[in-house]
Image (cartoon, rainbow over all chains, first blue to last red; front, top):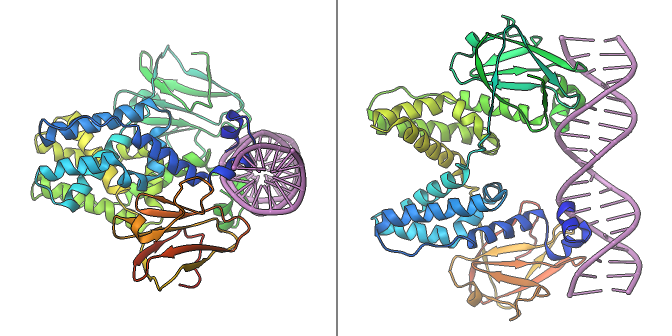
Length: 209
Length: 209
DNA sequence: ACCTGAACACCGTTCAAGT
DNA sequence: ACCTGAACACCGTTCAAGT
């Protein structure tokens, strides 16, 4: 609310004159997003219509920042929207009864909206010989490594026991390095010539190889 | 974090010894929920398997409070889970290629999880003659009426102009009564003999008919 | 009709310090 | 190895008061 007010050159308290609370704002936002979907014209059969419509939804969601999060926070808005009704209508012409059509519509939309994966762009890190040294900013508490090959254990040397005292924990395909309090440096021993895709929370930064 | 710490007879700061931050906690929670899904035994064909599995997901989500919200906040956990893998495997035996199977799996799970509708149990309110009087707690700022019949306008008398000054706004199927600052009482004129389903945010309470 | 300052009751998180 | 008090930098929201 404060950030929005700032952008409007107004104080946060003023927003409450126009809107009951944050959730009403979100509601209005969701309504706006849903209304902004350019409904493709009908015809071509229900299948084409459904495909075209979910493409339109996906386009809209991609176009506006955080649109997916907003929609998922206000799922009731979906049911009220015109897209929902249009989609359900298409599905009814396919022979579905109302209840089924509504269900499938919700499924299609929920998938289309939630399916916008985070799309992290991983940087390739080439391991040299010996341990790779990782510098950790004082603000961060850990680093995550994610490997391409399924056998992470083979790729990275970790203390054998999984106790919480271990500086690094292998869980499935990823290694979590943690408990680095106060320390500025963690260490992971990579097998030579292994290539690792490296992802980390935005809050963390990496220095050195 | 503070509430959890309280429940554990510990201070909030202590949690950060065990967990990097709130999002890691959510991650672990999601993992736990996903692992707690009793995987039905295979057989009966992919269709039965998929149905059985999504039923198991739905059961699990229904069993634990806020499980749906947790899962939707950590969608990455879905992809890692055994249910996801099992579901995708079923779909591959149906003839889908990996990428398609993964897509459909995400769709099915997202629907199963997000599809747990809020399920508001509306109370029937019978309108007498004359205006219905609604008492509003000092804490609340409004009340929402939702009618069964599509024509809300016919059911409820509202000042004709839609300006923000109006005490009640008709939007689609619902009437929002607002701007009740300081006032303890709002008023809506119902047509006699109309029956309205009444829903309101949990924060509000209703007194009188 | 709309905006404001000040306050309230919260958040998640860090850090030095304790045992 | 685990916990704590105190602090920091935020939240959403209300309210009397201003114009």
